[in-house]
Amino acid sequence: MSPHDFWLASVAELSAGLISIRFIKSGDRLAHCIGLQTSSKGSGIFLPVLESIEGDAQEAWPASPPMQQIVQELIGHNSAPVLLGVGLSGNGHWSSAVEETSTGSLKLDIACKSSKPASYLGSQYRVAADTEVDFENNEIRLTVKRGSNDSVNFVLSAAIGKISIAKENRLFSIMPGSEPSLIQTHRWCYNVAICPAKIQ
Image 1 (tube, rainbow, N blue to C red):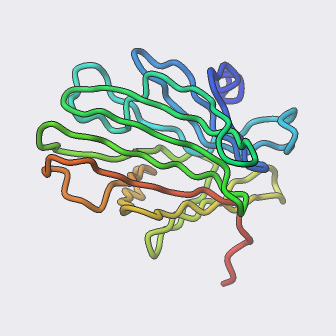
Image 2 (image 1 turned 180 degrees about the vertical axis):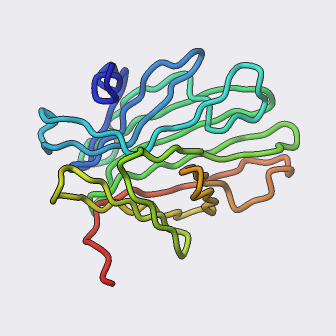
């Protein structure tokens, strides 16, 4: 099964222009992928760019929020679709909201209410093999190749929290700015947008 076919089996999805996020069932939770659609009407090919790294039921503090339920709600005066997720694991209760912003980016807003000190909190991703990665100023720039002479530039920026990257492993995490060991509600928020090519 190709990555395209795999992510077609989504249980929930939301698009912001050519950017799309898709959720699929993965064990006791929902994994997700942020990718590129070749058509803004949703009828084209879906190219995976960022795949969430999920944990399992034995992990109290998994690599990514353990979303177990996702629903779509129409929110605001313009009834814009928003994906709302909730999940439990170990000593944390997670919630998420995914929406398109007024500037056309995809916004992910995550919170975790912890009842015990956490060893790790965040959202961890693997970058697709055919995607170039650059990191600076708490932003990740991704160049997605659609053909030999065609590419699209994504930028992922943390609005709340911080980014940690292991470039050699093509992995990165968006984490809250608060100390995970504190017993409180932790929050991290990030945006994914298509942007112009970087000027050298």
